[in-house]
Image 1: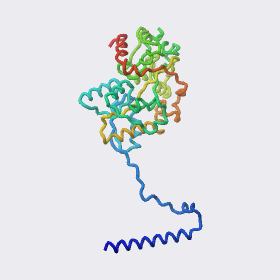
Image 2: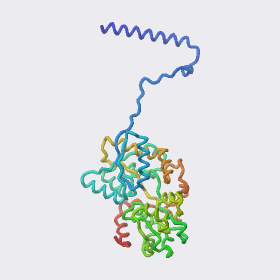
Image 3: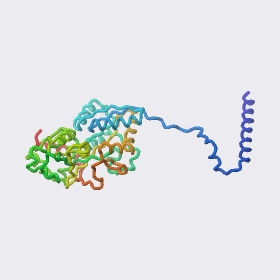
Image 4: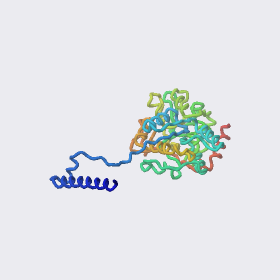
Length: 357
């Protein structure tokens, strides 16, 4: 029976080949004529599998902005879900440390303003190196420790003034110590805000005005808030005449109609690293989802989304938000990343000596 079946198949195949050969001989047009007929799809073509899994993000980013970004991401990746924990950088770090004492953390992805703490996690083998798709389009300086973490948009600490309440000319950081601003200027607390601590590192560094600025601000009755969000609200309302704040919040307040002016200090703004990193403790079934999120953040769609939210993107091809200066015109003070890893405790202690607990 098997031999008979094989013989029948062979005869049938021979007939098909004969018909095909005859058709080929009778065709008068050239090779391009094949495109005039109905295209035949490949017999077998692998379809990309949709990524599935769950990501848990610990961040200090503004709740509404990071939620909008995550919703856009899962909308484009319906097989992925997310959980979000959001607080100030200090509180996020405390939560991670507390969880690690029990053996592991629930976080899969971290995104906040403390590059020093991320370096510490990396040394302990707790961060997973990954190079996202699209990384070739951005400045190599946005890649920390060979894929340990990635900058996905840029944040700068600048000065913002309420144009109806501020009667002092402000051009640089030292202008914040003028007597006319006594008790009327505020900044975020470096003990709580990672961005404020980064600003401290930059301003007391070799290109900044040094510790004297902070000593003079102390003498001038500087006020502290826990977060940049509070500063944005209070400078917009006129409760403060001026504040030290991240650039996108000052810009967004102005674009929403508040009498807020962004002032880029002559000495230089402070670029605040706020990279995204994947924990090495992420469960295997969720690794692809975490990688997909990092890939997404560097896509053109996500970079344009950042611009819509008021951020300066890392991909220069998508432009900058309304009211932002061209990236090439932004002057910054030198930020010594070694201070985050080796001198962080000493800097915090000196700050406490000046301002108290």
